[in-house]
Image 1 (cartoon, one colour):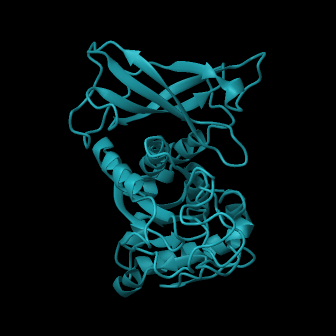
Image 2 (image 1 turned 180 degrees about the vertical axis):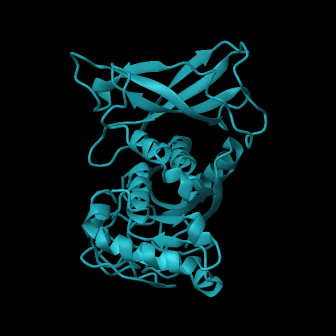
Length: 350
């Protein structure tokens, strides 16, 4: 039986990147694979490939070839059998990381010593369902649904929208072996969230990009779409969409770690704009100081404070160790850039 490998990469779309993919059919000649999606899958059996970068905003037509280097593989839950989703780094024709390849700087940072901090990440990826008219589900043409309140973690026909995609995606993410640990419907109607983690930086970011691709792919079967827009409804009293980043170092997780968490928060305060610069397009529209956000013009941290820039969970404060939640990244942020910036600031390696 041949092997179907869906090669997936992050493109050069501005201002917010998205995923592209194409299928490679390989002979089953000892390609490493496992029937257990939780087992690591070697990428050694997936050859490097190339694609047309002029059609993905990553090259010009006169010199259009870019390279695809497999770096992570998981089971393909949609095709089944010996089929895989293969995440790739994008390379230039000279074989070096392409300028749009934001995974490479994170990888180099870890290789150059940041991995000694044993940092763990978790991302809370919010997204919004769109109907055929490109409006969020539950938003009628020319009007608005009932005010926010009944939709968060809700159940029932008048409170939940997009349940079919939500359920299919959750099952597929688990079958693929992604590090998905939870899902829920969000505050704005037609909005939901999934959580990836808690794992090392590269795994968290890789799995988040693969999950985004998988979510987009599943919407094709339902006739609706998703957007990672940070503020899908600008007018009115509606929440935006974020990608909260949870991070801990080994020092934060050990007894007395709260002091390290607070020191990290002070370091984040000193680099406020540097973080906002990589926290996603239109952060100004989302980080207004309303709708469970802190204004982008200031930086605050606090225990159990969802109006702060950084929240220290209450159970972390009680235990005296754990992690912090940076609530500022947008839903459309690049997790590689977010993780890299967090590590540089917290570990003082700028």
